[in-house]
Image (cartoon, rainbow, N blue to C red):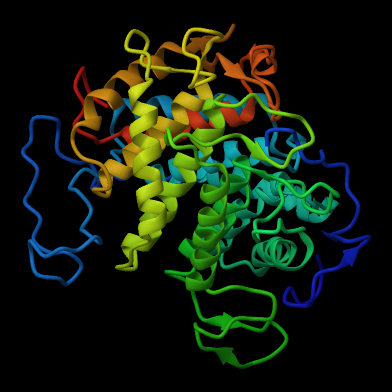
Length: 446
């Protein structure tokens, strides 16, 4: 985009888009030295007692509690491994060759969290190179999957204060509010402007992470400024077409409630899709899809907690889902089967397992689940490590990733091949390694 980034986005043929590009369309699945002052206590160090509850009296019935004293540890083995995985990824896959789509967005989300812990400048440079390439070449936002990259733009705006990144978020929010079709319940259709109005659990991460990162990005930024004027607007006055942090979080919370009411089963698991053109097998629950819910839902609650707020609907839904997920973890490998409802029928899958580990570790870090999850997380971490092999040059490569997956009958999920080095699987593993670092897990240093 050129000129004032707060001009209304270009809308053509019913799509929110920049100039035409060669990006992939929506998929069916939809260095500075490391910081040394963040290392948390080791697993044998007693947890410090909580001294407050965001201003409330200790022991009061409050939800928003202080963070546990185990921040992600930049000196941990897990962060070191995540860094080596990222280095290989950047060396093998030049940023400008990566498409504008959900798969690459999940990879970049992993790099965002790794950068937040290590502050390694090559990570930031790689993310900027990817985003800058697509801003120059043109990108199209026409579905939840192609909305996903805007989450990285939100982070880059927070990090750089460069308005070209905020304009990408503006395009995505315009798409979500004005372009994407809605179901009768008000849910954002996964396929955007496609005639079938359908909810897919993938969307809660793909567009949800945009809203969550945008809310996070507004916590420590300069006041809003119109590049074409001298006036500086107060932080609570947003340019046309934008949402402030509270509005972005409210939008996610509302959408989550709609999705849960439509898709969450009495078991706690979420069905892949609703009102889809392909009949799905009743009682068949796909692991990675439920992983998208766990990952995005707990990241959303993190933002609520940091604002001293609660969302009981989301919290209770996630508690039910997390309990169900933990109950079907494979006790031998520590991983999860690609179909949660049919353990042993098909295969154990890496990306779903990593998403569960990431989301549940984040939930523990913010006191949303209790210490009973720690042995489960330790086991999951062992399983994730078992899926990291070596390439021909001895560099770590992520294996056992189920490819892009459409909502379908049970048997079709088992036909999706397992592959290695898929960007969303790599991103999910990096997320899990970073978020579990610094936690008091058994079986060695996290």
